[in-house]
Length: 505
Image (cartoon, rainbow, N blue to C red; front, side):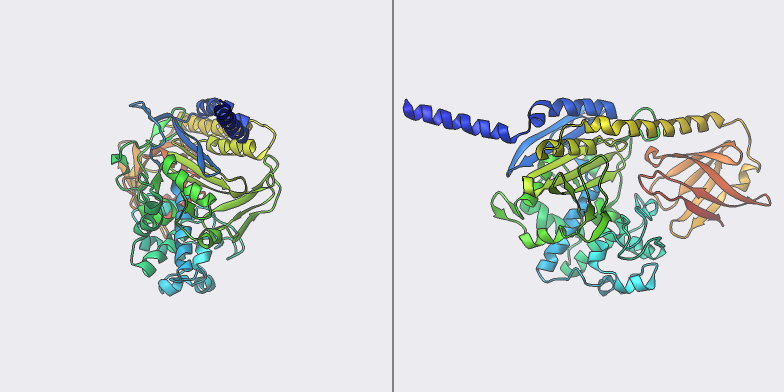
């Protein structure tokens, strides 16, 4: 009897220790917080996993992956993880450097002699490490309207990079660059003979047993238990979207995964390259990715307990209430996701969602960090909501006002005067044709992308993209002496901030 009582006491002690390590918010309130947040932010589906001390503490799917069929999200539901692919690319290159197959300080021109950046000096100096660090001086997302869902091959995107005129200074100014990561990733086949997608799969995904993870977007719609992408960026109701096809930017963001698989990736990060006691990657390989290469900010945040933000190789880093935190977000049309790990707390977080127009996926991450790292409770979702509602109201009102102006006036020139081919040096060609009383833009550099043009007034047209994620914007033609000479086209900031000027041929 005494032995049984001792065993019972020991079991109760273990349970008490387990619950003592799990914050009250996680144990009591997390699920209700998620459900309330999904409703507030109009998120159809969400999957989350929390790992700590080498174990999965929480893993669950919420809501629906398909609003039409009402199929539920679970731990195996696939989402595009987009830029969360970048750490896989950087880790692969770090492994090759560890194996003495390359040096991260090797020049890009060593592997691609014809490669050029806008500035000749930068061309001669730029290294693999530079490409992985976002400090070429380009603007954030510069060129992505041309590249994202575009027809260009990986090699053609690299060729186009010579046309990206950077407003910042090389190795000084931060600007998030997807084409840079593509270029770095394309070094992998040069030194291994394997395409990026094969090398990453063979060296990381397969050894980790990530059986439901894929390196390319091709065929995503045909896979079982896959989430549909949604947006309400320019509409009151959620709209389903086509799946992005971004294999041409593969090393920057084409991977597809689920929280069950990504929990293994974070457990490896938290155990210095080991998973379930097995050495998968040398610690030196992991460590190299976490060395800060680019300073993003050294200012204290007014809302969060952070003081600095930097970028290593495929990973952001910051302090959070005295702990060092590593994270990355990922955004594809219809999906926003993040992964986060805190080695000092042995804590990892994965959040995957299928509405791209919300910031709850970040609010939830901060809420969990607060709970584990001892930050006094502030409802982060409610803290972030007012700014979201304000911006959303402005966008929807602008769209409504533009739509109310359609059909009230007629353009100054006959529709035939606007038709023809237009060219932008970076993007290439678009074609404008007449369809009834409207105009239609066909984007030659994209797959099945068009935009309708309806005349409003004062020389402005209402432009609506066929893919709702690209947005709804006013459009102006350049007219000189009753001759149309050009047009300026804007797309959703989600893909690129700057508008493109096209010249009529």
